[in-house]
Length: 422
Image (tube, rainbow, N blue to C red; front, side, top):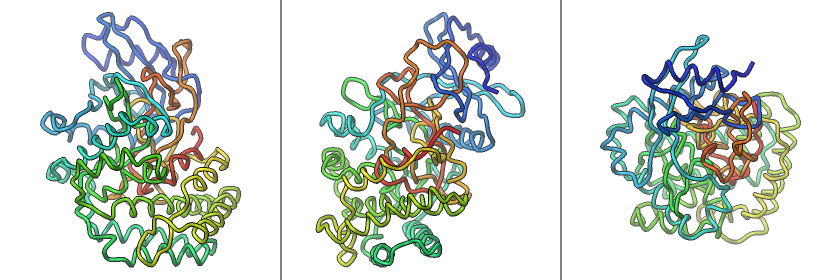
């Protein structure tokens, strides 16, 4: 049963010393989210978000968020051109804990809007580059996941092999992906610090620039392409962001876009694996349909090869069209904005696609599309935070995505659309 905003306000006063709540309201209009969440306004004007996990997976994700935020010390944050959520306090409740964060200012937009504005798109590229430029030493010191290039490649091969074992993966796609993973040059990159679960919902925008990034549960060291595949999947629409990223990183990873596109295509495999693991034939059929569409596009397109022998990449508009047609209903593995919203449950994907040392990148890192309108301030009734995204940061999206999962995001920003409230 969802906790009311009044109950959450009372919990917040015990979690934050001296907090005097003047106003509280439910974080979102939709119910059945992964967290009970509320926006709180103190008498001093301070704005806070309180969240209480409603499942073990949400609790695990929230714990990962806290570890990551603590690892992002003042020194690390000073290297970033945007704000990171600030942990304020916690209080025990019913076998779990309520966590309170400062509400970051800014507005949330879907991927099309983010990439359609040159100023915003450029800021996104530079912001991601700043994350990837952080020194890696603090990640190991904090006990966060670390992967070298060889391990990232092995993870991709594992997903491909498991998808092939289902008997549903078209031979043409298997051959294409195997050629990409066999291409040594594609996997010659220096691992960097990665956010691990970026999507459109991760970004808060103020004055046409990134003002905050949410959902750090996937923080670690790994393939920087994981943070870009939700952009790369948009093709020419994301050129400004990708160009800004490349300029900031001084072109240090010339094959990063091709790996990002490989990860985007492989989201179809992850979707298939999710369907077979949960014995959900509807999801399996959906994945098979999209894989068949991918085969057609691979044969018809001539641009963006994954490797010299792997053939063209899936046409962006076709991928988005297939993903948009996917029925909602399955849990989403991770949402790039875990701090402020939580509409989807990624636990099933996490269990299927990640081990304890891997990070969620599946549907979350794919730049989820706008999943619904957020609370516009009208509702003061208790409801669960569902992580819906809108133009108002007051109820901006975040989940973490929805926590660390080796999902390598998801096909274009639409892959995340397949998810639904827990």
